[in-house]
Image (tube, rainbow, N blue to C red):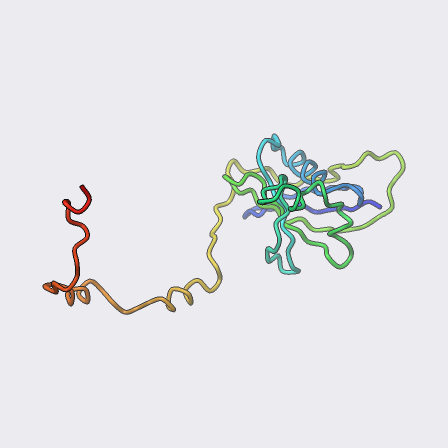
Length: 179
């Protein structure tokens, strides 16, 4: 079977590629197809992330085993596309170059019979020009303010005056102590 993906750059303008690839190819093969179709040189590290239907990021699948025990962590080349994606699970996130954070939304658009004579992977359609720089990402939780309020103690600089003149604290910062 052939998986047909729409790979959309997370940017303000519409920039996407449609890619056809065999269902028994690996995530590493899809990684290669994506960076080639968008014009990257392939010299940067990348990862896929599983996600839910609303693109909420879940588990990372990296290019290299970065775990504490070699071979314990599964990597891109360990996963066939059909292992992760099907009619029910159609979305995955791809991040290329962790300095620039080029982020792509990858969606399985169709599963079709393989056409004789076609070579896969294949870029079927290309729309939009790649920008010079990746869109800036804001890595803040939706409820970040809730956490800040949990730790707000209501103290300010004036409240620290209560320690002034209190000699019951031992001064460990004196110079002769550390010589």
